[in-house]
Image (tube, rainbow, N blue to C red):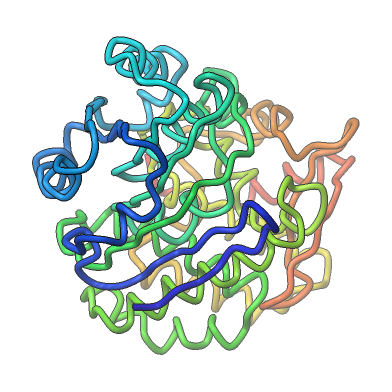
Length: 363
């Protein structure tokens, strides 16, 4: 078992990474506080893994479940209330522990429910997609979408622990695996050239779901995110660099309709657009811009903007972004491959020019 610690003083917690963790009998129990448990999952994950988790807990805890529909379109206040309904109907109190069993949508919503219910209860992340394992389950960002902007309603709220079972990736659709690889590529691009080079050498192994390669990629990604979160928990500085590709990507998700593009697909296009701008500013070399685009393509990710989306539509959505400061649009660009920088752009024409030269090829 690999263990990565997120160092946040009294709120520090471990990330466990191994094959078969969902069948491990004691690890989950030791992070549950109190005698009450609510497992939040969705209609896709429940038939696969819910019974196994319940079986581990029923002898020692009062276990209830809340099963949500599957998809980004349901990451709303309306469906957040379904979790609160389950908590209140079961008369669960402040000693309850919520367990998020699912991908990023389940994890974000469960964390926000835990942050809000009776002003804060414990929760545990059990991520079941690669994207949630390497990104959304770590660092305490929780929340829901609004029709005008992604993740605009939420809270920073850390889990008790994160349990990552590499085995669950065997049931992950290929498209979802690729979406997760976008976030993995991001880490190499922004802060670890050596890891980026490892990805170039091992992308085929990852796509074939080689357990050793996946474990290494997940561990390295979690280590990098944990280090950044420990320095800047609430994104007042360096943590913003983890949003490389996300300002463009969130604009795609919001405009196209939540769930039409997977988050990782939109981020891949966003990284390519950010790399284009980095190159235009004379920071990133043309060769390294090409390496990033090629690696995304090898991961079976889109690298060009949606055909139906023009620069003005990008800008309208990019202006509704949590990172923005005053009248600027805050972007994460690359000084070089393996080094990110925060760039506050006041010139919309500069962004439009990059978007307009992107060849739309994906609806």
